[in-house]
Length: 362
Ligand SMILES: Cc1cc2nc3c(=O)[nH]c(=O)nc-3n(C[C@H](O)[C@H](O)[C@H](O)COP(=O)(O)OP(=O)(O)OC[C@H]3O[C@@H](n4cnc5c(N)ncnc54)[C@H](O)[C@@H]3O)c2cc1C
Image (cartoon, rainbow, N blue to C red; front, side, top):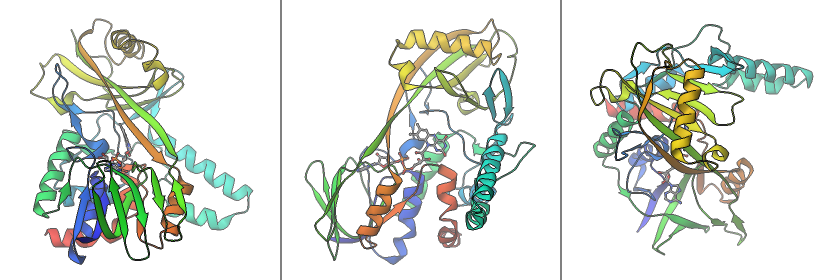
């Protein structure tokens, strides 16, 4: 069978993209693992409640929040207190990051007298100035809510997913795109959709040329810590981006996501760890180090004790932007590339196209 559309991957973006094709013909999603969600999935350690794999934040964009609430019937709640950046022993509003980046970009465009670039910047969702903190929204129970509602959405739309099938190679001909999986099974489609994080080895184009995909490999490493607080914790927090630290790069308080599953005096905190730190010590040493740093930052009290901990490594890779452009151009429009490195902005780019899905949902 030749499908009208095949989509590799089942992250929320890939699933919604797949359903946008359903009214135009046959659609198949192909997923290398046994479950949907991609980076937005949950995990179950032996000794901790089911929880999302790592610290997450959704960039601020009201339109996309509304869209996701409606399309996936999600209950989004503001991160309380608002997210922060920790730098030079101080907490500053997370929003200042976008203001500083936006200001730098403006000054750069003006110094280059590039007013076209300035105009394009204004259209970017990342271009924002905010002195006070905006409401950063997130599903109430994190990725658990997102994955559950995504599954419901897949069923509602009768989307076909081929699980446990990893595509290694793609061959584009003048008429179709052939996909070859690790187990040598083959699929054929008129149009293929991939994302910035699709893990394929090689693409062959209709003119016979081959592109070996260069992968920028990354390991997303997180330690989950179950902590007992003997008294009211010192500084409530939701999400913290940590700067200039060789061990920790971000911290999330996930206690709200596991309410009812842990005792009232316990907290579940997730800490993002740099690869170099993770590979230079064992997990118990790392967990102790995290606890000390959380105490230094006054995020937990000095009396807080560590009850349980665990770590996970989520391998990920990004295809270089220039290679993505090449794939899209040389495939004569047969391969559609979704830019997906920021969750919210990737939806922002497609919002106009996805509006019709809301109408069919109603
Ligand atoms: C741990 C982690 C934390 C992150 N935190 C944030 C955050 O806080 N905020 C934010 O905006 N973004 C974050 N991101 C970025 C995140 O990758 C994007 O938000 C978004 O999930 C990208 O969607 P995607 O489909 O490209 O990739 P993914 O979500 O990684 O999904 C890719 C899916 O495709 C499947 N797949 C890939 N290649 C193949 C193949 N060849 N054959 C079959 N199946 C395949 C994978 O199994 C996976 O299910 C984070 C990413 C990771 C890994």
